[in-house]
Length: 480
Image 1 (cartoon, rainbow, N blue to C red):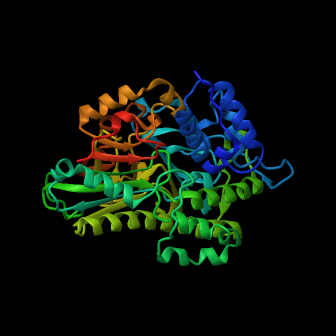
Image 2 (cartoon, rainbow, N blue to C red; image 1 turned 180 degrees about the vertical axis):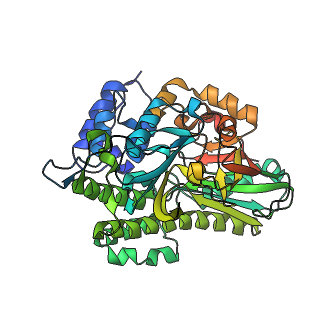
Image 3 (tube, one colour; image 1 turned 90 degrees about the horizontal axis):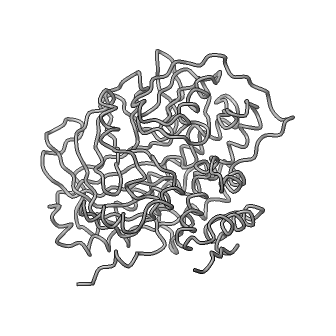
């Protein structure tokens, strides 16, 4: 068996920055993954670049993750801040299925002097700073890593009055439409940029560091990224009429997408996290929960940039959906969408607070949202109940139960092929790190949040595309 060889050129093509991280990554991959296939090695490296926080505790790849994350503040910089001895009380939904690492991170966040309320969702798992699935309300303060790196990551579902049997009868047609509508991959860019008003956003002119990102952001507009992002067709089932959804009972064809603000959001997150950690020196376990006060210039800048990233992420989805709707020759009868990595100004107990939802769905009274399962598990259209105990929030998906590196080491192509066949799903492309086995049971997650949302519809995936280097031989089908 040939030993793995990763070059600096390949890492740069993935989007790795110039510097020591390239040689560190090359050496560690060739040391610990020398008999891994190049395809799986590149999947690991993409995931590492996309969410380095997922690898900070990885026994083999932590040194690379640390290089990719913002550096710690200098000891002489900023104001030293102590945590409160006792934190705010927060509610946990689905406690039996949440790992201790996520609980520990939430307990730390609860001790911040700016924290006023919080909750942990049933799909929660350990992240970086605030846990994924963590909800935290603060007083006049915004935490860049409380929002996350993929600012504005969101769901978007278009419901078409088309018989979903068409997905089987004309499968190749729908596969082609997904392939033509977007690009996957961490560094993917279009040759010709799309036109959209978001590229004229005032933040691009007001914030000097964003001017430099404008060109790349434009070329990535309408792309989908990597990691757990996807575009898929499936069956939408509505069992009864709902006033908020306004879709008659029946079966429909659905187009569902999941992605965020691409390199633009990551640059904003890292830029302002560095500023936050330099201004407020927190204990080591809370360092990445450093905040920016909204009365200070940097806090106002971040707020403007964050909202730009949110609008940009929304535009990416709308471009994808508009392209496909045009090809289908139909307008959707309903579109449901929501952010799940963002911060909002909301009222809580009579005062305005900043609510961070890092991997959590807004679930205010009668607010619609999408909670996906996996590439084979159903997702749900939900309507919020406005539960104060959850800070008007719900889960944002099934949640990972297996790290990416563990998934790649333990799941085989044969495993995935069998699971896809069992559910009748056509997979255009994806990495094994996104196989259904890597995720929690969405049905258990939904049962754990009955007090938070009502289910008003169901989406069952049938044709799925995620980031992947190639279509494996067993996925290829003979052309008609």
